[in-house]
Length: 308
Image (cartoon, rainbow, N blue to C red; front, side, top):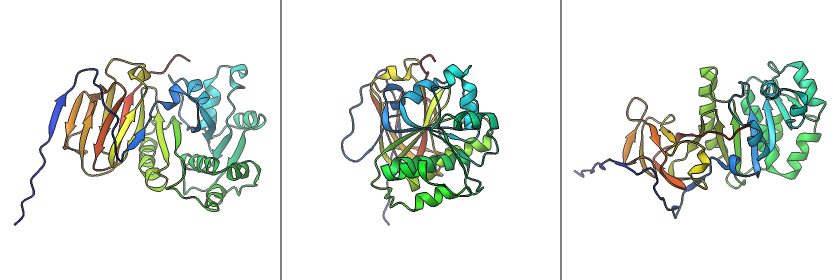
């Protein structure tokens, strides 16, 4: 009978600053703080319906190319600013949803200043999913972008039907960074829905890289295989010398992790909900961290934003 040797796990404590060489070969490259450091024409901002607190929205806004509010997310954007003088410089390109939360005064304010309000009454997708459909259409092609502005979109489920008309090859579409505000926090069921969408969009639209931005961290998915999470320097975190992070196996019963660049690096370390979870770990990699995993997992990294 063939005996399979169990791989031994290991945990190693690293110094606060630890150089990690960019990996060669097949890996997923992730830049979680791209929106802080520079403008990217292949990036979008989605605002959901929870208060925006302690986040420099202006910084995220100015470094993304299209801005979408999911229903009551427009209320949150409106309330973020103290007066119309500030507010007038931040008009969303699209407001989309079933409009059960959007205040009429807010809708009138933004629509009169150029926002396209797209009613989608179907209850088979959330307002967040409808906003993500706008993102997919917008970044597909110049033609699809024009369609968003000019077509009379059916008010029930017209966005999804429009998306189906394009020859979308999700394996060849260019990478799009999507930053989501107000998706974590508030009602717990909505938070769980947001996290589930990290897994869902990775399966259906792997070219989309989703990042939930909160007042304390950035949350994103690490894909099965080798991931390289990189940044210009640890100054990108605007926080303590060893920013806190976590590796959270929320989508599969169990994963094996191997890391390089964390305060407590692991090798062949089994992680599961109900078992070992690498929470309250830290980032030591001076310009990047490598995480290899046998299944998709969620990572959160602490970040403090520059002043508004």
